[in-house]
Image (tube, rainbow, N blue to C red; front, side, top):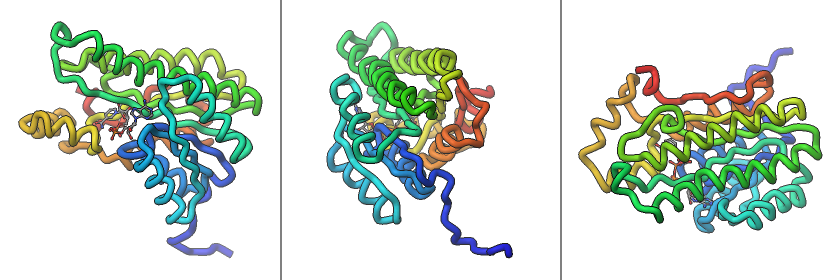
Length: 261
Ligand code: NAD
């Protein structure tokens, strides 16, 4: 008998353990919530305690399972402890969305300073590398897994006034491709999602600094609007799912056509 129930629960990640970094807000929160709705046991990681607890509470309120672990992804000991706590609590790690990142840059290349360079590269590059390092060690013990890193359209093309950010996101793409090549035969798939400009607190901060950029930024997308965090979540879930079982080392642009022109 076919049961016709539009409210049927999504069970596509039932029994899977999923770790999301930068999950206290924006794209990370939307993706953690989406994994929770799909039945995953979610580990929410972020430096922000209030935001992290709030995301975990939202997942639980919606009927899901979540654990918040305060983590600064730039510190090896904290990232190692994050993976250890995930395994101690849920028994394994199936999927990871390495999404924590900062931007902070609105200067031409020759005007930026060393401290800004170190800050951006530390979070976006070292943070992603550290997360992958400890996640892959765990996934190797289990015989497989799926990792998605948040790069950006700035990981695919140049980004005027954001040279350091663009360099850091190109580095995320390099980490993704190399890990995919190294661990494909171990059952670990590694991909990146490359968002266009997405409606999150990061965008709100940028527009607060330069409100006049709003129209111009919106119009660089042929679709004629900013993206929503949930649209990136959809892509991350698909890349982590068995539907993407032959996809690895790929950079999936979710950018309203920005990089098509
Ligand atoms: P956001 O600022 O709204 O959220 C980022 C989260 O990362 C925050 O909760 C923050 O606390 C956390 N974080 C920052 N540094 C951290 C650290 N060291 N350790 C752990 N957590 C840390 O930003 P967002 O727009 O949701 O961006 C998420 C990701 O998407 C970032 O990697 C960003 O570069 C990327 N991205 C965003 C856009 C956009 O337009 N919003 C476009 C392309 C790519």
